[in-house]
Image (spheres, one colour):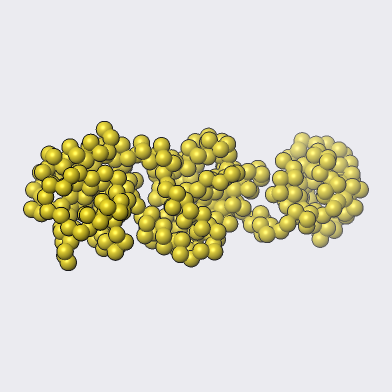
Length: 358
C-alpha cells in the first residue's frame, strides 16, 4: 500500500495523529490533525523536516538504537510521543510517530508496530527505486571523501542519521550495473552510505568491516578494496585512499581478487605512492615480451631459484636459462646482483600495479 493511505488508515484506526519520517527524519507522510498538537508537529509538517534541536533530543532518547516502540516523554511544550522504528530486518528505514496524549494502550502500540512492518516493505521499495540516498547525503559523502570539508561529516550524522561510530570505506569495481546493484544490496545489510562514481562505487560503512565477510555482500564480477578503519567520519578520506589502492591491486594482481584489504597488500602497499615513471627502463623494454615477463616475475618471486622456477613453469632448465639470458640482454641488468634483482622485481610489481601487463 502507498505510504499516505497507510498512514491515514492507521490514524483513523487509532483515533490519533500519525506522522512518518525517513531515516534522515524528513517527513514522508502525515495524517490530518484530529487531536492534541504541539509546535514540533506543526513545524515538521510545514518544513517537511523535524527541527535540528528536536532531532538531537529524539536521538538522545535512543530512537536510532530502538528495535521496538519507544515512549519519548514530553517536556517544554513538546507532547509525549510513541516512536516506532520502521525497519526491514535490521536496516533502519524511518520512524513512525504518534502523539501519546492520552497515553496509548498497549494494544494500540502493538497495532502501530504491525503497521510499521508493512510500511517498511513499502519504504524499502521506494528506497531502492530512488537510489537510497538523497542528493544532500550524496553531496555530504563526496565532501567527506575529499577530506577538505570538516563540516560534511557532521551533516551526515545530523541530517543523514549516520551513527557517530568508527568508519571503514570500501571501493567496488566492475561493470557499472553490477556495482550499482551491489551498493544497494550491501546498504541493506550494513549501516552505510554510498556514492557511485564513473569507474567505481564507494561504501562508507559504520564500524569495522571484516574483509572475510565482504564477498557475501556482492554478487557478480566485482572486486573490492577495503581501507583501514578510522575512528570517525571526519577521517574517512584516509580509509578511502587506502580502499582505492587496494581495489586496484585486487583488479590487477592475481591472488588478491575478489577482495583486497589495505592491511594485506604487502609490497603493493609500499608502492601505493610510487608513480609509473619510476619503472626501470629495462623493464619497459621487456614488457613487449609477455613470456619473458612471466618467467622473470616467477623467478624473482621464487627468490631466484632456478629449480623451483623450472618446476613452477614446467620448463626445461636450458629453456629457463636461455630466457633469463634474454632478460639480462634486454634490461641491461645483472641477475646475479642483489640490488639489480630488487630493482627488476619492484619495477615488475609497479608495472603490474599500473596495469602495464596482465
